[in-house]
Length: 251
Image 1: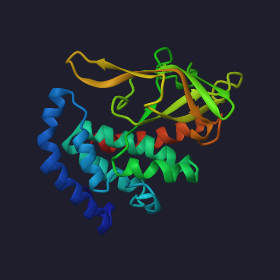
Image 2 (image 1 turned 90 degrees about the vertical axis):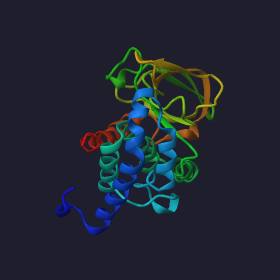
Image 3 (image 1 turned 60 degrees about the horizontal axis):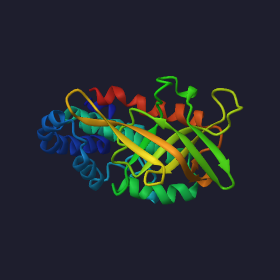
Image 4 (image 1 turned 30 degrees about the horizontal axis):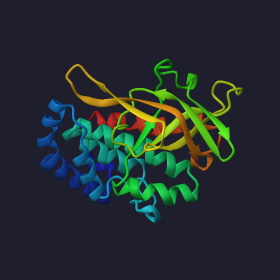
C-alpha cells in the first residue's frame, strides 16, 4: 500500500485488517476453496470488527467511512481470501449500500443495524435464467394488490441466497413502461411463503450459487427501496459502486 495515498488513520485501518487477514483468513482460505464453502464464520468475524458497516452512517451502527475505506478493507481481505472478499464486497457494495443510499428512514433504522452486526444476511436477486447480463429484460413481476405486491418469477446464480434473511429483488412493477423503467427494488423476506431456494452445485460438488423462485409471494409495498418504478437507476448506481471495488478485490 502506497503511504503517499493514505493518511495515518487509513494506514492504521489497513494494518489492522492486514494483520487479521493474514493471521486468520489466509490459513482458512485453502480449506474454503477445497470445500467450496460459504465463509460464514469469516462473515461474523468481520461484523465483530465493525467492518461490515465501514461505509454506513454511525447513527445506524456503522463507521461513517466511504469508498476509500471500503476499498482498503476489500484489498487487504482479498490478499488473504478471495471467497471472503467476494462476500464482503457483495454484502456492503450491493445490499447495505442500496438501503443506505436509497432507503427511507424507517428502512434504514430497521434493516441496517442487523446487516451491520452480522445477525442478518442480505442477497441480491438480479440475474434471471432467460435474461443473462441483460438485467432490464427481466420477467419477474410484482403485481400491486392494495398495500402489497404479489411477486412471481425467479432468479439464478444468486450468491448467499441459501444463507440470506433478505433479498433485494429487482422486479418489474409496471409491465407497460419502457424497458428500463417500470422496474423496482423490493426487499423480500426469504422466509416468506412461496420463496424456494434450490442449490446450484458446481462440478466440484460445491454450493455457492442458487436458483430462487417466487410463487405468489406477498410483500408490503413499503419494502420498495428507492422510488417505485425507478429501480433501474438504483441498480446501475450500486453496481457501479460494487464493480469499482473489483480492482481492489483482485489486488
